[in-house]
Length: 565
Image (cartoon, rainbow, N blue to C red; front, side, top):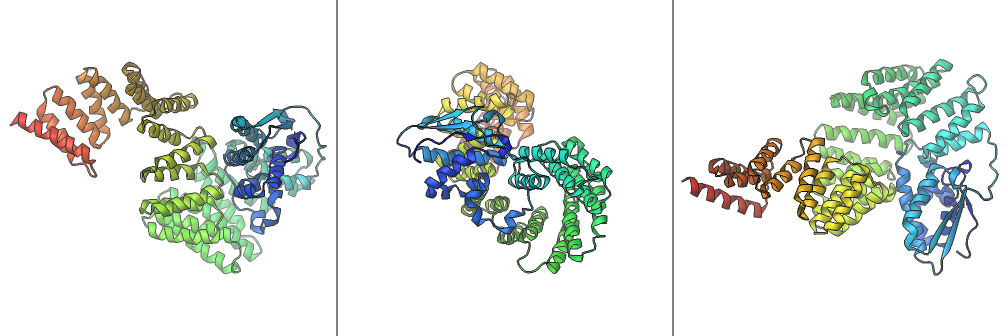
């Protein structure tokens, strides 16, 4: 890149990633090899960079991305910019205008850049003023196109604004097709943004505004999915979901065109299969899917609508797993990935089956594919970290866990796993900082409180440690680690009876050998040799016992027997 770029206009009127997409495009043109390594996220943020490679299937996606995907896109784009910044030989200032009026996607990415580029010769200048490109006053047709693109990309805040604007321009009486497109698009965006109650109101409005059979059919299915999946847990209602699915199916069966009738009917029946599976009737759900696949295959040409077929087969794979047949589930997922090889979700599911069967290398490969296609899917990074840790690759595990938290700082499991990795290698300062960072986000999280208590105990702060364990138990009275660790603090302080009381609770909650070994040790201190011997004997019966723990238990049990003989 030669010279400093002019201010990038970030105003939300220009769409998701306005301004920052221009920056990424400029860097990509200057560093094509670097851009190729970040193709998936760049393509999502700035589709024009890869427009020639888009396929018809991608133009009309049948699945919607989760709203949190934008955080992963921001992470990938930031890594791309940081890699470029690392090659700079002189300082560069990047100027962005109208930041205060930017779309949520732009603000998220700018925030990620600001947090990452401090170590590079790059300065971000964020302004609310500056020259602006004129925003064209769009027609309903142009708004509808923009709405579809935002929904397909998972840019739901912009989709919601676009749909709301569209609804101010048309009414059901003067332009029903556009009004419905804006209404259902707004409902879809709101559901993705955890505002499903407002989405439900929109579908009620649609039914009150028209009796058009296609609209009422679609509204019935969407209403069913809100009751089945998207409403707050207390408001979800399987019976209402089934009612609305049956309404959608009744209307689908009246569609004149045979092919479209089959497509709609099979699609809606997948909702019934979901409800049947949740109701504990996987065999009934499987019959619905098998029948749907047979009917779809009969009306589709070879190679047509592969993603539809993949989705049904994915549903069938999940049912095979629920029915206790992981091998058939794996075979089905192989076929699913053959139909739709760019869906990261399928690789994550297959990786879980590989891991359960002990095929760790295959699982790691599938998680790598999910990370590449996601892109930067936090769950795939986390699952791969667990696999690395199980294989003794703690450095790789640590790298993946740090990536998870860079994308999603609130990922509790990754936070705990990373703190424990630091704790395991004796890096107490880093471990404590990580635990406190997690507690700053979730102050009363019991597992983090317990972990911090363990760290404080290791650092010679027993009083603070006991208080942290007690707070953890107040939040989760079934947290075995907190009972066990608080007992250890009390035992070390000479409060042996109190330690035994805590260990009684731990043993009641868990069959693990360590609480029994610890209680046996405390009982020995109290001279209760017979009870201690029972604890040591029970602990020795545990499967897959660690060799050193088995040795210690055997020694302790022999001592008890000598005292009672």
